[in-house]
Length: 211
Image (cartoon, rainbow, N blue to C red; front, top):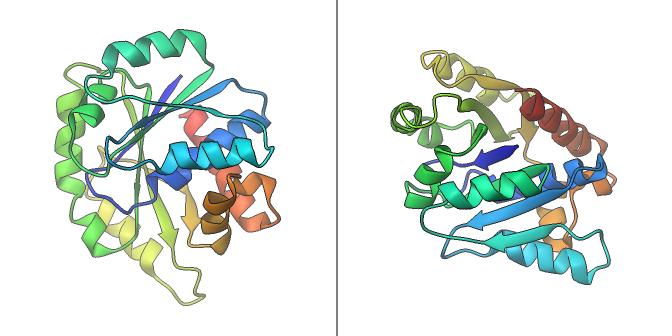
């Protein structure tokens, strides 16, 4: 199974979600590989290196740029799950990965800056489906406020209802310190003590794999 984590905008939390889903899948016994498809940022490969050096179970990470279609088709035969962490912009890597992926997970923060990109993202998805009509798409509200009176999730869902082409996950991932800590430590939150963060990643992983 190929899961592409991508968006046209940077800073939406793609890399953090990628490594956390990978860690949860590894915990479940899956043979997982992460393909880092950003030619300028090494967030995931640095995390994987820190993970191995800290003695945690190794998660293989490879770096690849350019046309990813054939590469992903080959990796899909050799691993249970291939997670692709694309750059936060429109890129050749993202578009060619869309032609091979089974699922596109599109995280976005519940703020107007991220939501304003939705129309362009939907157009890109529709173009990809000309080459990969079986591509399943799931949007995710990520880094939501934990404030008890916050309405960002509710307001964002109302806005995104105008885009039925981009169904939004039932799971919401909130802005928790554990997510930054796990990136610093080479771990996933499922290996840490924050029960709420752990539950969010486990529910999200279940939703993505079932999508």
